[in-house]
Image 1: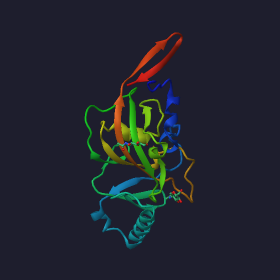
Image 2: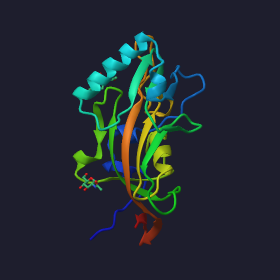
Image 3: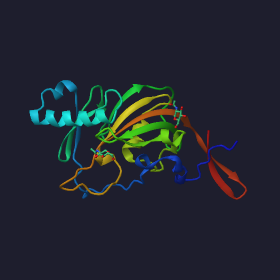
Image 4: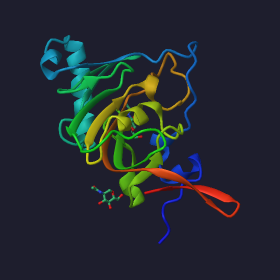
Length: 214
Ligand SMILES: *[C@@H]1O[C@H](CO)[C@@H](O)[C@H](O)[C@H]1NC(C)=O
Ligand SMILES: *[C@@H]1O[C@H](CO)[C@@H](O)[C@H](O)[C@H]1NC(C)=O
């Protein structure tokens, strides 16, 4: 049986689009991305009636899309969005996350390979990407810019066995073209279960060298 071989960043071939879009660092002159701010359902009761209407419409579409339990609500006003969700933390980067299972062991570090199942949703709760359709978990190494920044940051904070939902704001998302007057970039929600963290070593076989993770 062949071990999983990861010779380069290309080894993320099994990792579909939304999580693995090649990342181009944003320039400070880039387009406005807007802000995503999390508020609790209790705080949401203090929103204006217009905002509540927007939330209700969002909730209704999410319901049609059969979102999982306690899916965050989105109240978008142009570039800025209020994320209605309970129990979430916001990292200094702007990544919004909640752990449902802590997991065990050490946090994964650069060069290690993470093996995980995930499903990604847009603000409507529509599935944009999932490892389940691949029939096997996704795997990639950390620190090779193989994942969108918010996704990689979210995984870095997890331990094997951990289950986390994270909300990636547009600034940490894939480079999908500039926001325009008519359409702001969207947040993405990811449900991730980190199944395994593997340590990789470089192996030399004749004149070839590759990386083995186990
Ligand atoms: C989410 O994705 C669905 C399917 O592609 C699309 O119809 C919908 O407009 C998207 N929602 C948002 C908020 O972008
Ligand atoms: C992860 O997903 C694969 C299919 O992609 C499935 O076979 C496996 O059972 C899943 N593992 C868990 C722990 O859900």
